[in-house]
Length: 132
Length: 124
Image: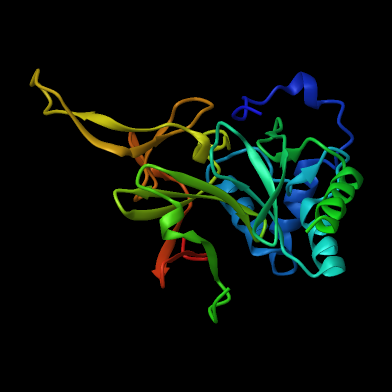
């Protein structure tokens, strides 16, 4: 994977994601019920008139946070994302140990998308944990 | 994580040499931490211009000089972060856009304790 490329509306317009503007508005109007990182992004984007924020997602639209929290609860181990050498891209860490590489990009609204479905991710995490 | 719920472990000091960086997701934030001559700086991975992945951009310096003078200097090598999307340049320490300080990246405090680098969220 290389560095993130500028957004390409042509390739993003058909993705069946929840509209970023709707998610953004919900976070803005009721910040106390959302993670502080999401609220921070909403405020940042409003300050600089940036595209609406949508929490990081997998290719099928599943929110990363929901997926990783479920995995952490199931397996009792931390699941995170790290890039040490940006030219080599991002990787998944399980219990702070490197597990596998992932491809990701920023969409047309400058929001992060991981290029695999949540089901694929869950399968790979489970497989990696079984080998630990 | 420490007793401070806003403080999160990033890496061991020895794992990030001067000039190196680490990107990490913490509490659904994408954060870049940079070792600049032994000082650790943490920045949110979003550019003020178009939301690009600023922490994946080039680190370099900047040209300085007096107005009306021909002489120019190259300063702050390794302290200027440029966005890979459109090249906007920022001071890695303050987070300020070089051309207009009213534009500012989200930055976080870092702490070092017992050889470990921590980031303090909510410190922007």
